[in-house]
Length: 592
Image (tube, rainbow, N blue to C red; front, side, top):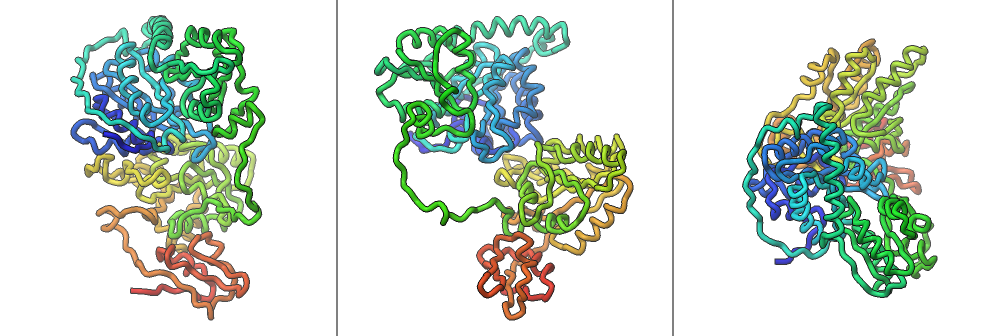
């Protein structure tokens, strides 16, 4: 049977067909949907959201050591978090086959950088495969698990945003049922004391030579002969772009197994063509190794290492030719800056916080990062997952020692707090930092599409589970001053900020209200009360002060001609923040 699938959906199907027993991940665009599509295979696969990527990798390794076929997924920056166990697995190898699916994000569609994680495979000394469409994304899961078990190595599958989210036709198959391999205690393999690791390093170097021999033999790397005046070496989605540009006017060495590279095959291919191009997205990962082997080729001296490629960029870079496009008046295109949704509880929080003076506000990774944008302007930094609390701690220590008068208010989401904020908060307590930590608990992992986390009461596969209590956790970490507030009540929020700013020891404010787009769980319905009526502006009372506009709610519009505000009822969720800021009470609730 044939299906139209995204790359992420295809990887999930491939996990099912390849006999995967265990899968774990922390959600992160562009890889999130892989685990969401594995989750329905409840009978065959144990699928879990982990608190962070390091935990996900370690859990998957535990399953592998127990003899199961395991798979772990993450976005590119997630591998930074998981690097510690990832590098060690390069030495130890596996028992049951193990795949790490890594999704890079060229052009930073939803990320703080666009690092090229192919270098991680080389650095950690593990095998790597790269699919170029959804069919290969599915098929390579099975190939990768077989390579993993044959060579006793973790296999990294490198995807990019375009492969993850683009759809193509996939031929489906049946699941291969594979028994759990026996577990045997082996201290010379998994017990990485220095004396053991020294021997494991010797073994992994030998293993890499075996993998390179395989790379030269495998059908995952193949040649398409056409005109030999031009030869192209490419992999992943860049191969598709090269095919669009060159067509049958070039021959191709298409690489699906990209570490170790098949250098013998590359040399033979290079000898057969007059001009050799290496077309790859982001960094010159293949090009550097090819040139180091003494093979002349053209690559990043022509093709950019910044942002996503496309056929137009490849053609312009190599031939200085541009295909005609539709011309239009760019001046009439209205910019659409990213903004918090109508009724978002984070907006009310940042609206009140942004009015405070002499604050340094470190932010974190999540949809609340938008609190730093106009008109809220209530964030100073955004570095990486969990950094807000520890960055704020460092700032506060220097600030205090040198008699500066700024206070630090660190802002972090609930899922991010579980991910890597808890250890940072422990540092605040341990090293006596007078910071205010605000945990924005919107009852779900909002930014990546409403995945469950330890605080929601549900697992990935829908089972009810223990609901982690953020107040209890922060108190257990040593925070004595803890308050939970409804961020939609601005007076309550104001008083809570006043309370925290007067303290001379660390405090935590928990802003607790569900995401405006969240499908409410039974726990949400028991805890939170909603007035679903919409807000409406009485334009006879409106004085055009724009106070409501300054909240940044996209449901509020201001007519410059009549100098009056109005509210789009289709967007309004009745959060009442605009009602609270209106100085003349021109906004009220309407409807039943």
